Length: 307
Length: 308
Image 1 (cartoon, rainbow over the protein chains, first blue to last red):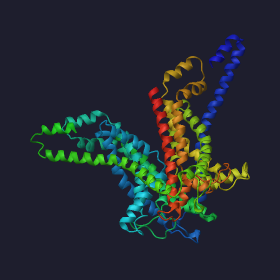
Image 2 (cartoon, rainbow over the protein chains, first blue to last red):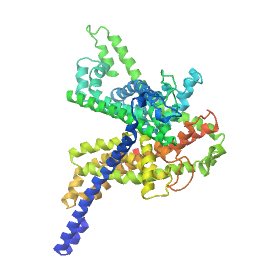
Image 3 (spheres, rainbow over the protein chains, first blue to last red):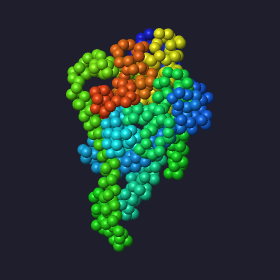
Image 4 (cartoon, rainbow over the protein chains, first blue to last red):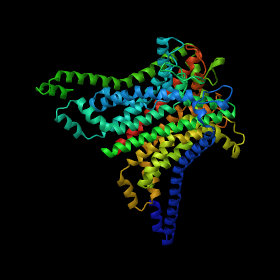
């Protein structure tokens, strides 16, 4: 643009004007381009959702939710075991990962001093957040499956809901830690100092003041992390979620399948009936995710109003 | 800790259970510390499992053969990982061809063009793209994108191919590229923009000739992070790209490293067999690749943080 101005000086006034107007029309083109590029992603998202809804919704009925998968009759197949498996995974993963994640965040934000080891821990956590989920699957296969298989016997515990939940917990821990730390960091130091001034110990300040204040942020991050866990397929395939199961899981040590695993299995089948089943199961999965995310937003808004 | 001990020394009658309190504090600190150090243990776990299984795999198969030969069919005894790397690279190139321009333009849109109100809608909406489970993207690529491309411009496209897997993966990565780039663009000082405006630059010129060059190291970080996502992405390639480990163009079915791991793990593979070893050897390769990319990306982020 500097060049344009200099050229304008040496040439006639009209020449300069056309250059300016050309530059401005190029500006309009660029503005349109920028908005169009942003819209592309959103349009594709809309098309994706619309196509899944179109394929899947007609197939959803009560029988689909409460029925069992079928190897021979896709018309009567249901997702009951997969849905229960996913809920079990969700519950166990939450029980394991939330206390660990919040505990780690509190330590790193409130206790840890600036030693080299604590710096290693921090860098390590941000690195773990970038490890592909399938690698966590390999970790689960190499350690949890073998360990639990060893403890409970080769045919029972190895490939159980517990191993799946442990694997998913490690997968989402970095996210929970990072978001909880951000929430804690946002709290003003005057809260801490006020607490200490009144004679509270460090933990009393954390438990009584910091955690309640950090709750909306931590909860939002945790719910988002858990919804990521519900949607994960690859690590569950590796740690041995089953593809065909005709009973509901009974406890943490029972073998299981999960919604995404079931969807993957149905997508892989050649017949079109199975594709429809996959679409219907995707609709259910997306509905669960939407519910989880709405809850996160509601919680955040509600608590934000208070503080 | 020091603070607590000091206060402990001054304990008065109103705080009878003081030593109990002190003990509780110590226990809690140790428990919390254990939570934090668990992450280091996780890393050790990953590295240990990968190295342990990979080393025992390389006792049977030469590492030289693994890294340099171009034939991958473990059941027939050929263990050249290059076709799998090729599949991963191919789908990553397609994905980044989509995600780099769209993500960067979206970042410019969010930070330079959109009004505050529009931005508060657009940003979360774009983030949804990253929250959709990848198996759903796989379904989308297989049942919608491939048939669409086949009907319109590429009648010879196979039902499994790297092109649609890559295109859909690119869409998935848009928010990653957009949000990291936007952070970098946001960090560019206002004075640079205003200086350029004062010299008569238009908005487009400020965005493309001032802001983007100034944020370049952050944008590089975004792109590398995007590549790392693409390399590690599993379900899209497992569903839509096929399971044929070969070196050919993006219109053919290919097999990515992640897809291979999933394919073998879905079957019943006895522990300790060579086939079982392959998934860890491939996993190690994948881990080294993504770790390197993440570290390089982190390095770029630090560079722009230092600059501004």
